[in-house]
Length: 283
Length: 292
Image 1 (cartoon, each protein chain N blue to C red):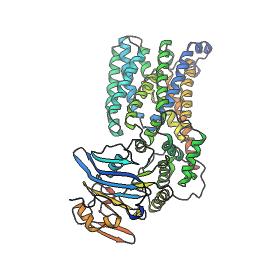
Image 2: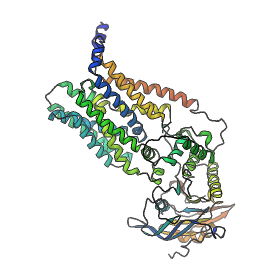
Image 3: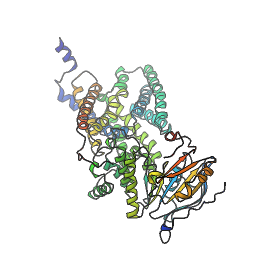
């Protein structure tokens, strides 16, 4: 297949003088013999929101790891604010998916946020008044101050993810990497988290890369979509990528995309190894 | 009749003189309590209780070998511990792989230890002590060893405390923030090995868990504060081990039943207190929290 839309043209609204936060040029990533993706060109500008879609094993999370400096590209260039990626960079905030927390895990909401502030430094966790104020600020920003002192294991999944957002914002990052942060949350909590991300990028210009299996919950925020499947990819606005012909081409089989009530319904896409999508339907 | 038995077990007539004799041991025990209390907070965070048991059995084998060869028992026990820690550390991070490897390692270590002990022709009390504890038998040079190793453990813990906490409780985000999650794992296992080897000298290989797991297991029942847990845990461990020695002094029973019983009672009390706290909602929280 020829990568006819390898370059993602930023939406008209975000072009102009807006600085580029993340740029990938002719990037390739291999795991062993397998090429996850190659020839990837991507520019993410301040305040932009890009959703990364695709089946498991298509290299979505690996792309995040490359940006975090945990995986080197096998070819091409990757720049963050004009510099090569560095492990533990303060420019990047990372929000993982929600996971069950064991009931007696010795962490309160404020402690999780604190890990984001200074957990990576050596030495003993000696606090200061300034640190406490900073943590309170972050918790307030995401509306989690009411349960700041609750153990993480006693919070709901949605509350935990709010705290995760606060943790990711601890270094005031220019780029937020989100790895399925809405997974296993109910629609109400999904909406709350999406709203937090939207407010953040509007107020601070934080760019967002959002890996997800489901486009619909974030659709109102999405500037562009990067769709990865088995070594191929397609990028563009949701309307450009989420069509029957593009997805059929990507998957190499018939895929039907219907747009209804502001949502994309996809039927027929083979989604291997994903227990949540046994029927191959993305809703 | 029953008072006779009571007198056989407990006799506090010469308590003051006895106490003077074991002053060194009490100091060593207090230091080990501090080490055990601190290390146990990470054992809980990293779910390593079973690894502690595995390390203890190999440490026992090392100590038994040293006893047989007439070498320094603490050194032998350290060698066994470090070897076990290295093997467990090399087994990788995945809990399932790790636990089966430990399950294989543990009986082998215990078997070796039994072999060495059966070949040993010395005092029987020495044999038994390695398994079930012998603080009173700890002499001055051994005390120096124990304190020296403990200081090393405490220093390393102080340096890696924050990133180790991050890596143990939130490994994905820790890795994203540049914490060397994978490298910290063998470092901690090694430190744990040292702590276990020293603790064995007091409570014995079979009862190490009472000082290296129980204190933090109790503390995490009553609080989730990362500052309070190590403090409480140290308090519980020191209370158990020093309290155990002070009671054991006037008794004919070895120290370990006292230590383990005190630790267990503290744990039960914390469980009860924690259950009450959980039922009442744990922390104060406005009743009508906006869902989310």
